[in-house]
Image (cartoon, rainbow, N blue to C red; front, side, top):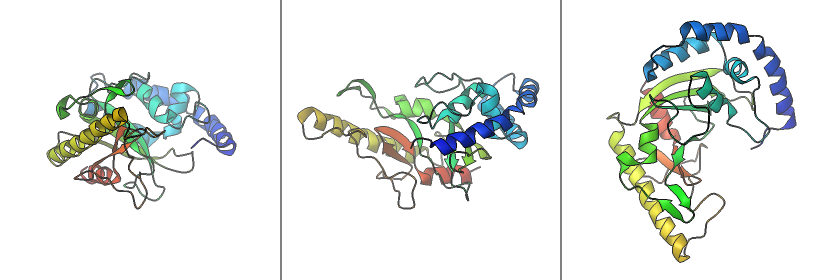
Length: 253
């Protein structure tokens, strides 16, 4: 959903406030950013960072703006890559040598209920539709290599003005609490995508704007995954983290 003119106006007013903290933020980063960046070291830095600053302070200092146009609703997450010395270039690989960064909104009254879908990359890379680079081995999949170790930052949703961070946590998809269940869910997604590709080739499946796989319903109260364990889902032919898996991640901290 695009940002409304009223929300853009509010963001511009928030920008003026946040830019007042630019000098103190930059000093904090110079003095505290870990020399040897590991997932856990960056997590510890972020916990300290968001005790002192909010998300708008960081984004404004790093980029000079809080959005990149009315249709860009993922700007804050991308700029956080820059703030943590990541790629900031939209490449499909993981964001840092130590792993992946995900930023997402939670509902305004809960730090454990997602408001925004967390996507984890395409199921298979399209060479040219309907041709795909099909990977059948979970451990060689785009999902596994990208999400093997992840830093997750969430913030309360308040229209388009979500800025107060409420979770800074990490998770590994190798964690025995969910490793085998994630593998089973991904393999279910893999099999569905393969069938959909074959169906598109023989004319029994028609590609929609949302892709050739049926998307799961998202983050609402009736949302549910069609996977065996309910941890992963599909959205626009990409893998997503379900609200159930998100709750498990937060409760494991």
